[in-house]
Image (spheres, rainbow, N blue to C red):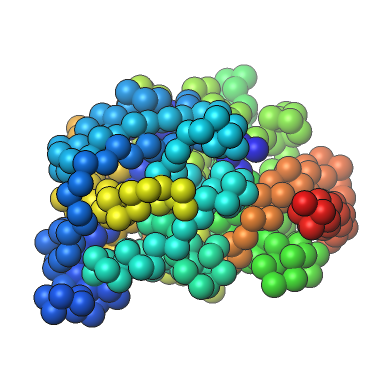
Length: 454
C-alpha cells in the first residue's frame, strides 16, 4: 500500500518538499522541570543527554521517489552525524517493510505521513511508545503545533505517542495574477471565504482567444482528508464510515462540487480532475486562475516565469480563523531498535530550531514549531519568495483532527467516486455518500475478519 495520497515527485528534492521540521527538543516534559532538577531548556538542546555509545541507526522511508538517498543524506543524514559524531546514519528507502524484516534487516527509525503510518509502521508491529524518552530527556511537547501532537496521540489510542512531526505540507492558494489581470478580476485577499472564491471562479471561468480558462483547481482528496470541519472519515470507536452518518459530509461535498458543475468545466473529462491533472493545468498549461496546494511546495522550475502570488486557504464564513487539518509526516523510533535512546535523540534534534531555522529561511521547509515568528522567516534568503505572501502557506490555526485510525485510507478511492458521481453522473449527494460508506464498511469488515483469523 502506497501513500494515502501519492505525493508529487517534486517532494524528492528539498526545495520542492513540504518538509516542516518540528519544535525545540528541549525543556521539561510538558513544561515541567526534569528529573535531574534542572529547569527546562529553551535553546534547542535536551536537558538530559542520551548515552554517547557508538550507534549505527538505520532509517527507513517507504517512497524512493519522494526522498532519494542523496537528498535524504544531504538534508537529514549529514546534519545528524555532524551533531552526533557517535551516530552513523544508514538510509533505506522502498521495499516492503515485512520483507526487509524477514531478511534480517533492523530498522531504528521509520518516517511516514500520518496517512502512510498504519500500513508501514503499525501493520508491521513496529510502533513504540516514546513517552518514556519524552519524560527522561525532558522533551517539551508544548513547543510543537498542538493539533499535530493530538493527531499522533489519537493514532496511539490516546495512551501514548509513537513519533514526532517532521513534515507538514502547505495549506494555501497559488494564483496566476496574469489571468486575473486579463479578465479584470481582483486578486484573492486574506480571509477569503468559500463563497467569495466561488464568485471569483465564476468570473475567471470563460473562453478567450480559443483557450478555455477555469477559475479553480484542487486536490479534493486531500481537501477531504484534511477538511476544515474536522469531519471524521471512519469513526475510531465504531470502525464505521461516517460519510453517511455525519451530515457535514453533504455540506462539504456540495461546497466542493459546485465549482466543477459550472458550465465552463464541462470540457474536462471525469478522469482528469485528479490532483496531477489539476496541478498541470495550473502550472504547465496556465489555464487555471487559482490552485489550492495541499501536497507540496512548488519550486522555481515548475512555476517558471508565471506572474504568481499566494493567498490563504479559503475559510467557511462561520469559521473565519480555521484552516485545514494538518497532514504531518512523523519520525518514529521503532520497537525493534536496539538504540532507542539514541534514536529518540536524533528525531528530537530534527525538531529543533537549530536544525530547521536555516532551512526555513532558504524556503525549503515549513515549520511545525508552534512559533509564529519562525514561520515569518520563511523564504527570506530565497529570491523566489521575494515580495510573495508566504504567510499564506500555513493557517493561523489548524483545524483539530477529525479522526485518526488505520482505516481512514480506505476512503480515498471511494471519495473520488463520490465526487465524480455527483459531478458527472448527476447522482444525489446523499446517495453517493451512502453507497461509498457501504463499500468502505464492507472493506473494514473484511480486514477485521482477516485480522482476527491470524
